[in-house]
Amino acid sequence: VFDADYTNQIAEKNEENNHFEMTIKVIDRESILTKSVSSDGTINVYVESDPPKIGEEMYMYVTFTGIDEKKIEHINYAITGKQDGELVFFADNAYEAEGEGLHITRVLDSDSPVDIQVTILGIGFPRNEDSWTGPKGEVVSLQVIPEFPLALMVLAIGMLIILTVKSRMITLHNFI
Image (cartoon, rainbow, N blue to C red; front, side, top):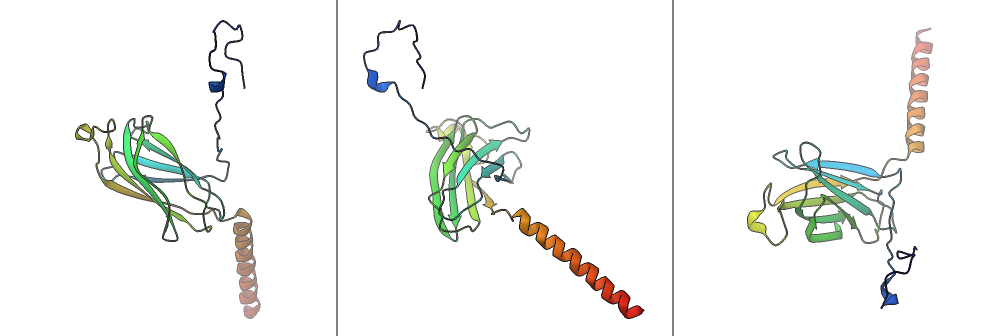
């Protein structure tokens, strides 16, 4: 909260419109980055998201870049998200002036991977489809998979090492 006119030089007639609230979701170090590329190689589609977690929404930051990795302005697209075959998110006429946008799924029913399909509709201003450029109607698919917990991975590697050492010791013992 701040006072925009601290000198009181502007006569305010409506005190009810001076408030703005916004919720910001910060994706932490557990975020997952997936990438897909259009068939002609001209558009990279990145999705950075939380890992899917039962009982929580999943935030998806979608970014479109060109071959040079610069964001593509005025991109039109449709996006769906499915988990276990059920629709968890859908936007059929999305537009991003700056080349990136935020989408939020409904509360997820499981920790299963979320399949994301992005349909590139074209590059250009909305409601002016005749002048759109780039791939039109191309579907790119991505999948957000829950990360394998680090502790389980360390445990699995440790068990593999122990089994390898034991098997070598048994083999060596049989030769003696």
